[in-house]
Length: 229
Length: 229
DNA sequence: GTTCTAAATTGGTCGTGATTGGTTGCCTAC
DNA sequence: GTAGGCAACCAATCACGACCAATTTAGAAC
Image 1: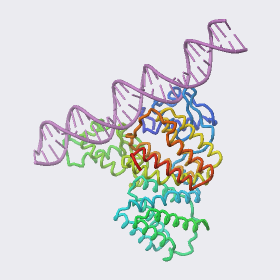
Image 2 (image 1 turned 90 degrees about the horizontal axis):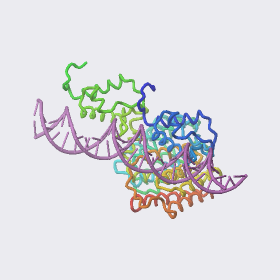
Image 3 (image 1 turned 90 degrees about the vertical axis):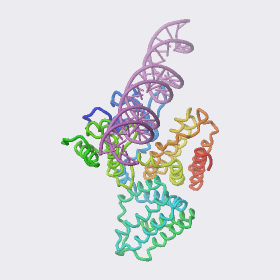
Image 4 (image 1 turned 60 degrees about the vertical axis):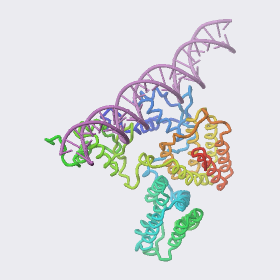
């Protein structure tokens, strides 16, 4: 696809640089070629190269100093984050749970502060749909939608985006070990009560209660998943 | 194919553009020709072309940015989740701050629970680099790296990924209005003390203190940005 | 062998001009 | 009178080159 010599999309230089480093087998502490040499090797402009180097520096992959050069960071922190699909292979269900416990209670708190009346209505509608689910699969989808509607209720598109990011990974992470001894969620399924508590807290504009209700809910989900909290 | 160059019915330009993209075999992420070139190729006016491009952008087919160009959307991405660049146009600095306040304290809490000794060392190294910054730009990069090293210290790649997602948007969000009346951060810049508090809390494995220290830090950043808390 | 100096090297910065998507306003055609 | 073509302008981005400051290297001077 490199038929055209003109610029491809901006991230191209970054990817080339990553490939170059990976192919070069650089050990931690090793020095990279000088910038003016790299732009020849990679065939990119210096500004594009330096932008990519900035990214790698922020990621902690490299370390630069005027007059000395650019070096691979001494501590191998394996902190290069792969793409979403790749990510889901490396995330354990426990880590997923910790991440949810980190993000979602805070989102619930924001929702309690900012939710519009309409958003509360949508929240209740999502709750009702989950309650009416006739099998576990649709319940999961509805539960999904319920949690997302809380992120939506924050009115903060960035928080919603963060939630979606988390959720995309969650859908793929393998936790099929969930015990389902009934064919559909029981009416007294504890989640329903917990959902109601969250909604009530949001409706009453009580950020602390919303935060705690969500945390409690996720803890009880965690308990069902892992056997205990 | 069109014998008459003059206008047919209004949607003509849109259809032509669709055909052009389909015929061009563009891969996701590829760049389209510039508008002023496309109007030559397609034989339509710029206003008609831009209207069509607007439609495609709303449909999520393409992605535009001033000074860069027009690109095919990288992945099929559910229409509900706008791309990162698109996102940054709709996120206000205030929303960004609320999102940081939602995520980063929780990350600091996780770091306090899970940070390895090595991770704490990397934390301190990042702190020292920021302290030694000689101008605001490198300070920002170092501060960035510091916050990221906290996410790294959680040992949870998903949390790190969430942080990166947030950070990618943060780099683009327009808050150039930040006041910088000195040419570099003063040694008594409050952030330095706050960074130290965070590190101390993580080192002492005190999740609550780490959470609060990060919240306080972000609050003071917010104060600097918006004038008050 | 030591010391000092000049040149070369390197990452960082700045300015200029070109390109790009976005905006505005005038003007024609219907 | 209104919609749309048309052109000029705006602001963001990038390539390119020159220059700057930190650092290393080489060699001259003694």
